[in-house]
Length: 45
Image (cartoon, rainbow, N blue to C red; front, side):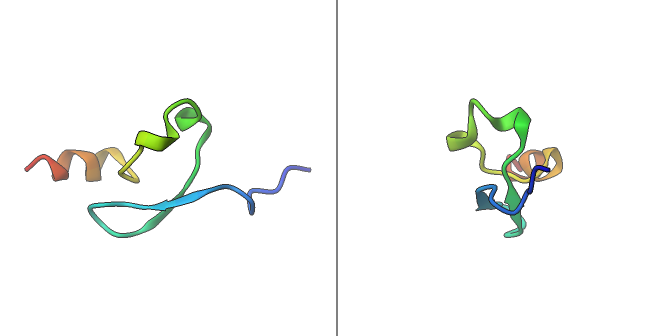
C-alpha cells in the first residue's frame, strides 16, 4: 500500500496554504508556485 504521508510540500504564494506534490508536477516540481489554477490566475492581476 502506498502512503501519501511522505510527499514533499510547498506553500502557495497567493493563498499561503500548504499543498503536496502531485504526479502531474513530477518533472517541474521546482517551478511550481501555486496550489491551483485559480491562484495562478489571480497572481497575475
